[in-house]
Figure 1 (cartoon, helix red, strand yellow):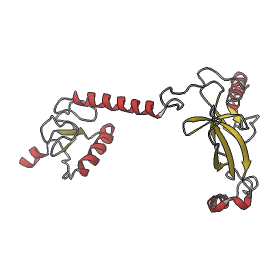
Figure 2: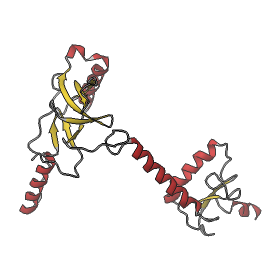
Figure 3: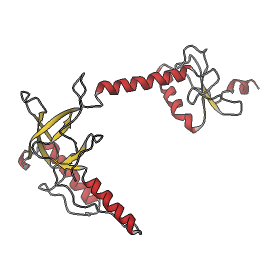
Figure 4: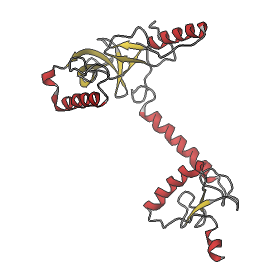
Length: 253
């Protein structure tokens, strides 16, 4: 099974040969469930592609074709990979020496050289990358879509930036609709029975509201927004926030 589907943008790829089975602990008690599991396992295994020259992969958001794969000789590993192997060996020893002892010749993290050519651009210089043998690649089919504006694979950086801008605009619109006396986190009204936190000074999120109007529920689900506001508030030299919305009334009594 190596079929590509229209909506399947990528598969997983690596240097290792594809597995023929998936190791599982235990099995279903039903014969039909076991049969369904075997079918599901086949679908999972079919989602892997072994890298070889000619395979299309993604690098830096652009399509590249594998030109060459080569294992780096041990004497050319360099200090960085030597240290990583030493760390892997130390972790194996600390873990009770379970499994086979890491060997440089078979260690999953041993360095490989990946030579990639930008797809459809034979005039450009190939890219030489060094990475671990167990690095997982995103593999492309022969027919793929790219952004007409920048040439990147979707979602391109422009699309991601536009999506983030849309999210921020939607957040700002909702925030501007929150009436005074309502929680700036969830937008709901804060009753006299509810604990709340009020930040003195100008309202950083709603400058159109008067001072001391930045209030939040003290409940857990609003705590993230409280922390987010607090960081901005403290960065601007804020004072200690009042633990209760009605702290001034308590002091007066």
